[in-house]
Image 1: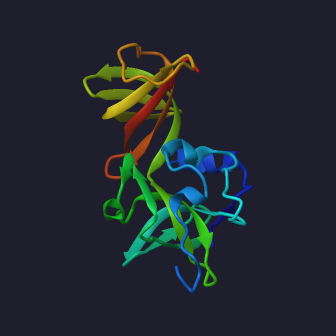
Image 2: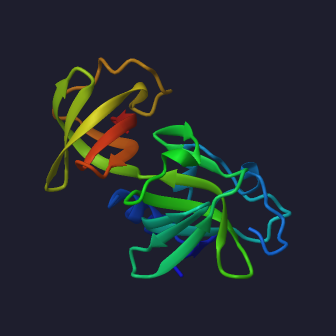
Image 3: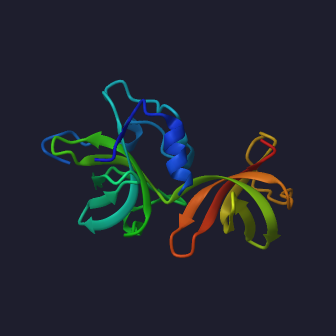
Length: 204
């Protein structure tokens, strides 16, 4: 099973994210294990509710969906089963519902391991990425980015925000410039390898 526990190395989780209930147990709410927004997926050590002994992390590509169970193929070749519940928080560009999850999506899930090995998820981030890029072009509602040796298109979400030189987030993206190094937090689109840009930071 591909799982990572609450003290797992945050850099390993970031590396994966960049490259892109039952059995009588109590189902916990999403706030019990830590934050819910996109930033929470990259926290080195989630802030846990003292009542929860440990959390489990699952990463990989979704290979099948049967009812409320997600079958997940991990990046290291392992396999996991993720149980969605009526208290599971779902992020896919923004807070949403389990209905938007599709076979082929990338997944990062946080939850609690059940006796049968299934992970009951309190939060699931779908296709989330955190990319170090360079801005190569700027168009209306679109950025052309370079990530390493790869060129990609960034679709700017309507509610996207920017941070300049570590300052507070703003909806003003007018100060973005070609040639800037930029950290992009967003969601990968498996259909064409582009990215929905949720947050962009320059001069950080």
